[in-house]
Length: 221
Image 1 (cartoon, rainbow, N blue to C red):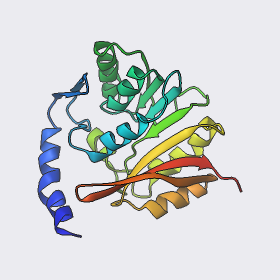
Image 2 (image 1 turned 60 degrees about the vertical axis):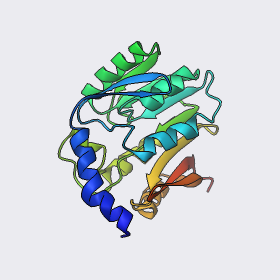
Image 3 (image 1 turned 120 degrees about the vertical axis):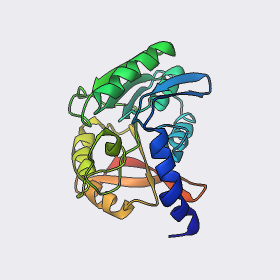
Image 4 (image 1 turned 90 degrees about the horizontal axis):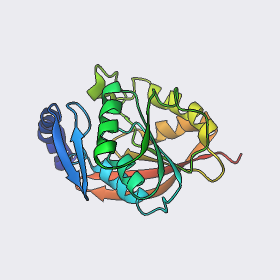
């Protein structure tokens, strides 16, 4: 582990966890969000803004768009403001309640679904799906940790990939962001078990961390 990553682990992460333990307000490109305590804050995590900037390069007008695990809602609200027909889901009722308030205050129409992955999302094909998953293999003890930890045996991905296949059409663009700090090869192997392929779509090093965006496609074999 290099010095930058050690500093991040020992000093920066604890500071961020303390800050996101309190509710706050965040503004980005004309969007004003109330961020509840314990919800990932877009100001402190590279992945949200990198995935958002990638999505905003797409033609979103009248496209059906799903953000799976919407959290703070920045991506969903931004997509809606660019003309997408947005569905946002999250496992947390608190997040869904807050997302409805944020959507209303930003004059956006979003379908909000309280759902553990795809459990409560009506079966349909989306044009675009955005996923910013938890990926550290550890058991989450509370809602905040559910944004970090995917279960000791990658249970999040073992449930995600079999469900995802039913929502993919041949033209669906499903994008998932991962960090070099996670076990990407393990996640790819789990995807293969559901006849899915992860193809590198984009990558970017932000400060000390290399980030990767993968497209998820049905295997052609």
